[in-house]
Every structure is written in structure tokens, then in C-alpha cells.
Length: 92
Image 1 (cartoon, helix red, strand yellow):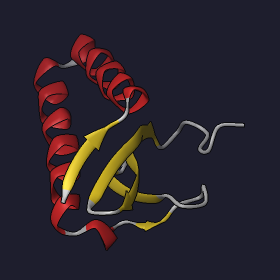
Image 2 (tube, rainbow, N blue to C red):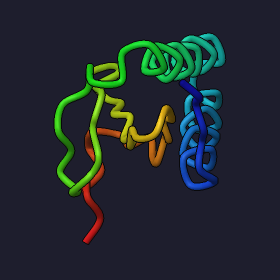
Image 3 (cartoon, helix red, strand yellow):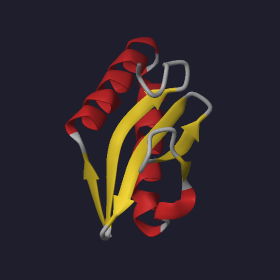
Image 4 (cartoon, rainbow, N blue to C red):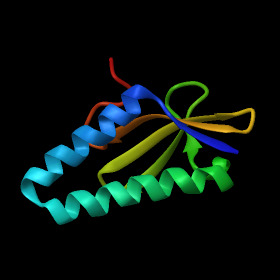
């Protein structure tokens, strides 16, 4: 199984990292590692996330404040978004 990140997901991840880094660089690195680890685990356990709020997606809670949104099909996991749980999801 292959893991792919969409451009919006990469942008989400970077924005979260940069925001946290301003407040606590160590926490930013730790959170980014959690995101990377959660995405990598999906390659071996793609059904581990719950059914997503958008048809065809799944969601995996990474931490109390971070949600990974992905699709899984044809031997591929595609990370679609990384969402802060305070953010409205799906967007209007």
C-alpha cells in the first residue's frame, strides 16, 4: 500500500507546524511526528479510521486537537487534510 499526501494536506500540516513552532518548537516537532506516524500506520491499517463526514473519506483522530482526513482505495492511502478539531469540518 502506498501513502500519498495532497497539496492541501501538506499545506495544513505546515500551517499547524508553523503556528505551534511560534509558541513551543518542541511541541511543534512532537505534533508533526505524531501526524507522520499516524499517516504511516494507515498504510498497514487503512480501515482504522472512522467513516468520514464527507462521503468516501475516513477520519483518524491523531490527538485531542488534530484530525487526519483520508481516502483509501486501490492499494493507496491519500491524506486529504489535517484539521484542527476546533475548525469547522467539513468546510461550508
